[in-house]
Image 1 (cartoon, rainbow, N blue to C red):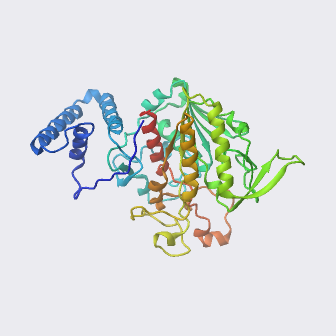
Image 2: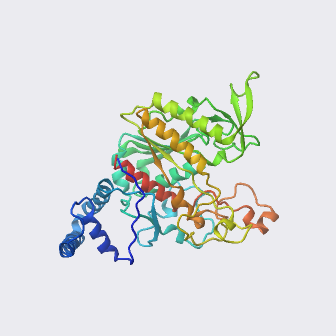
Image 3: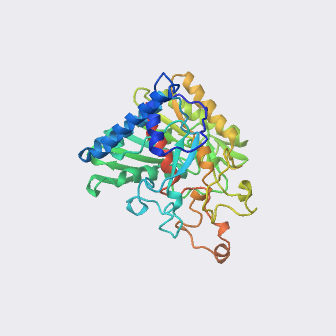
Length: 429
């Protein structure tokens, strides 16, 4: 399992990419350091010679790619690398990892290019951890890992966007005859199946993880949100036996108070009470963790929790005009460590505490801490470039800020990096 720490090292100048990568391959996992400059230089030249030889061997393309991915994955194991501490690097040669139009199952809520966005540079950013490289996503290798297995994303619409991203990442290599999409459980469970591998990549709609009056995957907008704080089985029976489960829950909790229900919906004897949100959030997370402890097969199931996805709804937070938001934004936030007010550290602390408690009980849940790296990406949201589910009013048309979506993410885009992080963990467990 990866060991994480926050040690950061910055060089005074950028070295050429090939030299840097070759140097990393030489140094990572070694014990002798870089004290002898001559030996280090010879090692770098030798490594470059090996890499050049591999590239010139045209008939070994697939093997070459596999070797590069294995080196990157091994570097994660042998180094103490914090994958979530790094920087965004513009890379319009390798990114995007797929084309929006080529994804058979792209969501109109996330298809920004289709709905008129002209500036597409948001698709060309690669996440670079400070002390290692993320392994490049290989759809064939992932599907082989998922052979006869289920990968299930459980949560809200941000989680669903990550699922769409994962489907798009593997979709392009598959002929139409070898893939299918199915929806069951009243539309709550969507199943993308790859027939050749008998593998499924699924999404289950459960925005608060426990039962709530927002559980309908379509009609979930309600004036007062209510949760059955001790009830999770209705949802959990659809995902408990999966091989990989990726959870999230944050967006739907953003309000000061929540209605808590003890009893069943429609029960005249049920008890309702208004409770401070953070307390209810912790209660829900405890219900979730207790279910995992009792019902999950520790020898089979790998568990992940994605931290909160930031929003960019108040431009004054990054020094722009008050009243504006992500609309018209084309650049990311440059300030290192930027943190918007839409991300609540107290909620993240609750999740970390619950996950730590689970670990003491012998169950490991890997946190995918995507919050900080996503904070910088104010230009990555759909804004006005998505399908509008209801006709816009003249007032809305005259004020695009008012209906800009600064919560979800364009695809290809930021969620692809979340899945690259997930991919790295799947292959390093």
